[in-house]
Length: 174
Image (tube, rainbow, N blue to C red; front, top):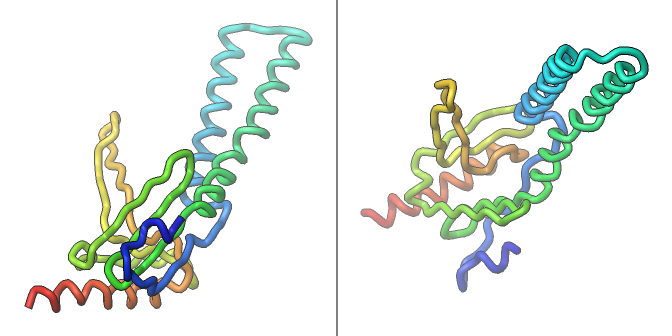
């Protein structure tokens, strides 16, 4: 998958993946939202349907079953996505490849890597952010999506390598 993205004579300097973990901020939020939605919808449906006897027990059993089945899906999907993500740093550019239902490839030239930032997430992993996109949702809340090498182990080393690549752009301008 990586070899097809490389240009002739392009050399790989570093290759990595996100640290696979089940409970990330995103998966926690999705899990909390799913749990809350199932509980609220169950209560609303219970009040609207006005069940009694065995139907009431069956309805509550189905709601509990939905919580037990659906709630773990968010962390599992996040883990699956992390396992299908590859980060490549070559002598010419930085590449992110995410292969889920479709393949998303982003390539960053040294000129696009001038304003990178590092977000430490834990002692041994973090994010190297190349770009971000912010937009307001329907409630007016700003949602920010980060692009770059997210969730990498040893981010200090990776950041140094990215900065070395970024320096090539400034040397070429002179």
